[in-house]
Amino acid sequence: MFNQKIIDEMMHYFKTGPTTISDDLIKCTKDSNEWCPFLHGKMTDYNCYKTHPEINSLITYLKKYALCYEFLDIDVYSLRYLNEIINCLEKPDENPTYINFKKNIRELINFIKFNNKLVYSKIILLTCEESTRLDEALNTYNINSFFSSIVMAVSAVESRLHYLVQKKNKTIYNKYFKKATLGQLIQLFDKNSYQDNKFNSVKKVLPEKYKPLIQVLNYYRIFSAHAKTVEINYKIAQSILNFSFSFLLNKETKIDSRLTKCS
Image 1: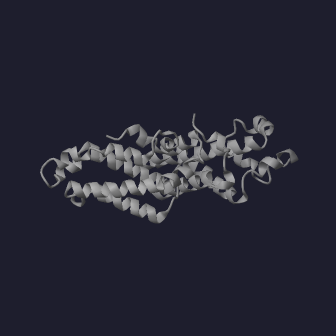
Image 2: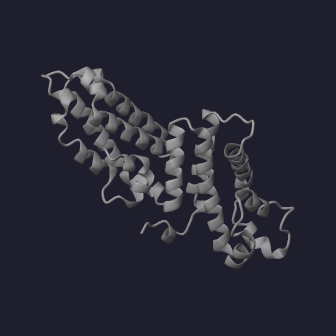
Image 3: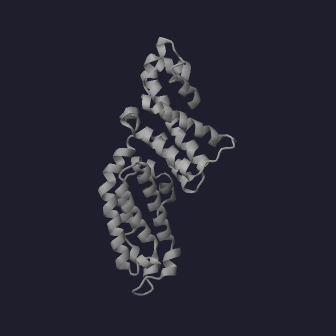
């Protein structure tokens, strides 16, 4: 059965795992011919297939992978193909025999194996803290807990902004922004605030195009974290997650590669 901790912390696992996701799939499905649904004769037992713990765990595992794949923005066409394979594996009638099941698993493993390096190239741009927060954002988004999802995603962006300011001028950061909230950090990038010349260098760490984006993220973070009468639905949460990932994975807001390595 697939480890629930790995499912919950999949992006962080990408960074730290001793094996790749495709290797894990190969290992965990190696003895799938001995799974109960395929031991009732030549044909798959559909009722057993629907309730079998290994298969349900496999589908949960794959859906989290697809969610990571989606927000890491690897490739929309590949994402469709990935979801088609997962949907196929989820349906007993698409796997009438073990031969069909094994064929679908093989296609899936080949797909993931082909994309391992590409997915890792995105994940490596995140720190351990950021990937952990984004994992939690995806987990809560997946169960329709949209307030929590937004708070966690935007907290990863806040962490990155702290890093960018500190890297540019540690003295200024320690004196004025070390304990700043996201809202307070945003003030730094307002042309009407912090007008003293000593702030000029740190003001430039945020590309101009991201200033409106940060305002939007902070707006929805506030309404998600506090009791406000603002509706947060699926589409809003999806947009905030996309904006957060886009900010964190962009080369203009890149973090020192030494800080993205996990100990």
